[in-house]
Amino acid sequence: MAVKNEYFLAVFAGSVNGKALKLFSYVGWAVFFSVNMLICAASAQIENEFESEILDNTIENVTYCVDPNWAPYEAIRNNLHVGISAEYLEIIADIGNLSFTLVPTESWQQSLEFVQQGRCQVIPMLNTSDYRRQFLDFSLPYFEAPNVLIAKEGTPMLQGYAGVGNRTVGIVDGYRQLEYIYRHYPNVRLAMVPSEREGLNLLGEDKFDVMVGSLLSVNMHINNQNLKDLSIVGYAEPHDSLAFGVNKSSSHLIPKLNFAIERIPEEKKVEIYKRWNNVKMRYSRSYSQLMLWVTIVLLVLLWLIYRNRYVRKYQHIVAQKDVEIGALQATLLEKNRTLAFLSAHDKTTGLYNRNHMIQRAEEEISRFQRFHTTATLILIDLAQRDVKTRAIDDFVREDLLRKTAASCLSTIREVDVVSRFNEQLFIILCPQTELDAATTLAHRLLERMKQEDAISSLMSVSMGLAELKDEEEFSDWYERTLKALNKTKREGVDSISVAE
Image (cartoon, rainbow, N blue to C red; front, side, top):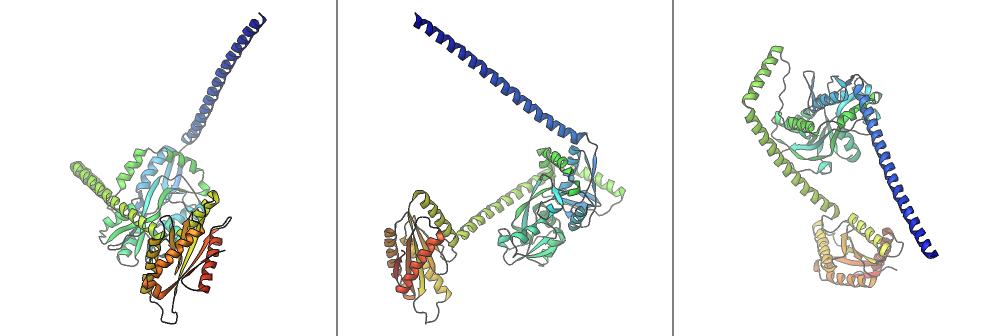
């Protein structure tokens, strides 16, 4: 009877504990959801307060300067600001409770000087750079613009500044590309021009070989000036990521500008881009008020009459340019693949070059340190047998190097890596290969090279081998193998030595 009572007490206690645990779980979830709702409400309140602080303030007038000759991105025509940046300014002014007043300038360089001196507060469309950060703060970028290389018809495709070679490049003075070239391509020869328009004219007169400029602007000038002998021959890194540059004394404008930029509708961005992409612009210098109204009326009438025709023509041009850009991108992709191959291979023999071999050797050393799979290095040196006779000419020497490369490739295994390390020194990396197996491979290769009459008659072949050791870097491994090679040279040609 006592046992039965104890059993009922235990069941009762367990039931009570289970209900208490279940009640505690409900309370915990209720607290969690309450705290989460409070956090969300606080975040929404902070965001609303920030938005109210911007929108409730009175409209602030902001002075600005632009590049007067960078259409269609921005330009000054008849003392009016036109272009892509002008349309973005209207949207940003409406969202951010701002009023923008243009400070006219004669050149881009003068605009930079004005904003640096505080004569205007902002520049609405420019790239960030280390130099400009000294006197400007930058907003979020709001427009991406590719840069291109332009040259005469017949010029081959150029892979950025690295493919320019000995050509002279024209560039607008004060552009961010100038600072980029000075830092990353100091050997490129430059010619300064006051604007992209004048630069294209100078390029047509053969004052320099290549010019760099913005895609939309360059394309517009080529069309407007009918420069049929000029064409785009490549992209120039980096692409423009355009933002507001604000004088540091007016840095309080940055939150307002960022607030407005983040709230620009995507469809507005697309409309602006389509409106200015590939448009042939015609500028009028100065007309009387009467002529201006007459021109507007005529344009409206023409637009109403020929609307469908122009829409179809515009769509055809856009489709054609899309095809051209697609073809250009495909060509650039193929050139990039070729460049990637050449960067890792020797141009004479087609073997891997020194840098690629060092990289593969470092990977093999890392694998050895993790998994203790050994590896062996083979050095092959070619030397002229009779140095007293006249030197071997370059054509014959290159042929001998190619025959040596062919002998190596026909002898080694698929897992082995062979490279031309320097002028007449070849290296074979044998992954997961012990010294004995590598020595057998070296003897087989030596016999194969002796069978090549062109090699055996003119060149002596020396080989050195070394197996990778614990805690050994590539430089130490290479030095041991080189000592074995030098030992072979001292003891006799056409032989093999193994490092200690």
